[in-house]
Image (tube, rainbow, N blue to C red; front, side, top):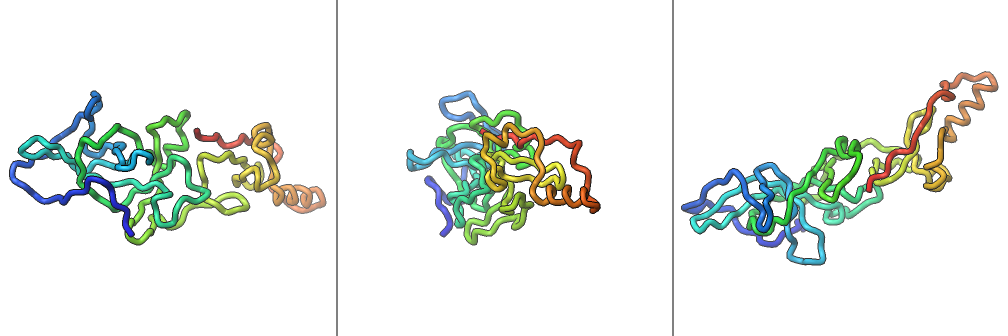
Length: 223
């Protein structure tokens, strides 16, 4: 069943409505415009705020401001639920649209592309990322395939520390290669078991790619 949000109202044209260029979040001096991503107050105060992208801002004859939004879903809100490779700040851009009171907007946030998010030096509370679009009714994702890494063949989770093999250049979770996080952080060099076997064969007269000069650092953990 498709997820519903509080405050849903039908987007029917009414006399006296006018489009607005911006809206100032109640109780703040923060201004939002069409295309901005915002945090919206849930009906259940025990839940985190909803995340949405503003598609339209309009007011009626009584100056009540409404926003048409496109919802982002958290992994746990999707039909498949949260999986191991989903990051703590990961969102899915859904095909679920609503019209909400602008008064439910609590603040602004930034939804980065996955590539740009992984380049952030510091991840703030307002930073999220999106790498999938999501169909709320069917649970389908676009794209339906992404690159996988490590022996476990899982997509990259930017929250997890990974180390790169100097030979094959693939990335591995420390636990998948028999290391602790602490051991991985101290690594100066890492060669996976398959490439290690290749080095041994080269020493016995078989060809292998050179791996001795590369230096590898663990991938940065996002917080």
